[in-house]
Length: 254
Image 1: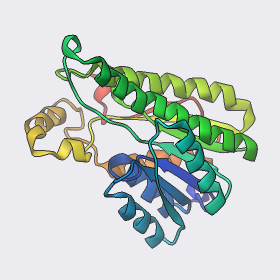
Image 2 (image 1 turned 180 degrees about the horizontal axis):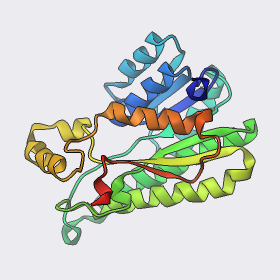
Image 3 (image 1 turned 90 degrees about the vertical axis):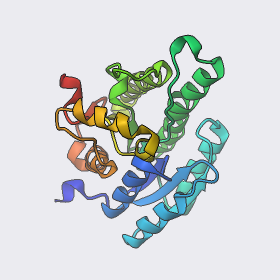
Image 4 (image 1 turned 45 degrees about the horizontal axis):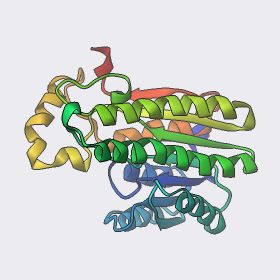
């Protein structure tokens, strides 16, 4: 169906070197978009993402930048438009996760989490939004987490939960500011997902708990975030803005 066809769109994806961001960047390419793929310097998977987009017959560019650096993010968006064309679609997936008991957490660990997961998404959305406002239309999708809506049992991650709750409300706030200016802003909140972080041998026992506590009885594959991202980026979601789409196997129902 052409409702989900992204042909002619120019996409910009942060966190595109691995995990959910990589899967979505490739998925947008397969749906017809040309894709600028951004990740931190030294990201081993960034070239792989670009190659996969190009294998789908679309143009792609690899960009190394830190989402905490406003100037670098603005330059990345400018480069995207210079090399691919006017920006119409963005997915902000760059983020980190770790855990420490709140009473023991160093201030620097808190600040780093908020700087990357929340400020990084704001700076990315700000740069993307400025381009889209100039172009007169656009869609931004921010990757949040079900941890922005609930507190995960057994996980000591007050900083992570706070950052993702912030992403959800940032998304809604931007959506309302730009609703009548041609830009839609939505969030995807994944549940427990088989990202590289959750595939490490040392969290094998924790994965069993994640599976047992998810109503569908398993964790999500990263590719299961692609369909929701294409939907929110496409004409099929033309009247959808300010939404936090939970993709969690039913987890928050419990």
